[in-house]
Length: 182
Image 1 (spheres, rainbow, N blue to C red):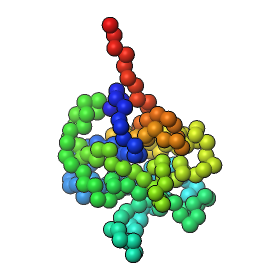
Image 2: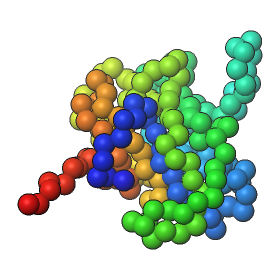
Image 3: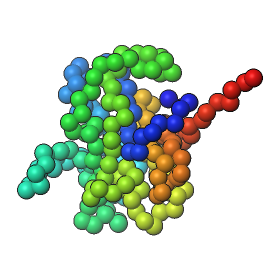
Image 4: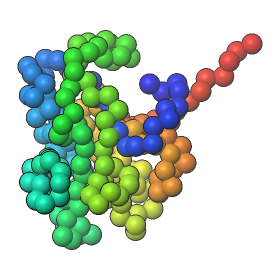
């Protein structure tokens, strides 16, 4: 996962949910929604964070689940959307060897976005008053509340950093290219 630099330009959750966590793809998706909602609730304790189903009213779009965030700097609300919350159906596969190759429900590289087409994986990253360090610390914090089989990928972005990163279990990991030994 960390030895090559992906060409990806979207924020993604990379997921290998152990198969024994859910019996069906629908159950896996519901459980994943709960994990993401809980992580945001813990990471934003001074905000109201709730998973809601948005009924598509005159938007020409289908209804979808999203994380609704209300509180300081989120008036009337902010939100986090993502294919993993909605129409992306997980498939059974094997987790990679660094995770011991167990049977897993996978959502590989599915997009995670925000309200109004903003960047950076959701509030508070889109909050203009946060420093680069504060934004990276939030991503590190949110990852600390997600299961260890869930990875948060951030692409090079002008609002974050000029290099891709992966956050997992509260750790910030950079992509490396090992030097060839002669």
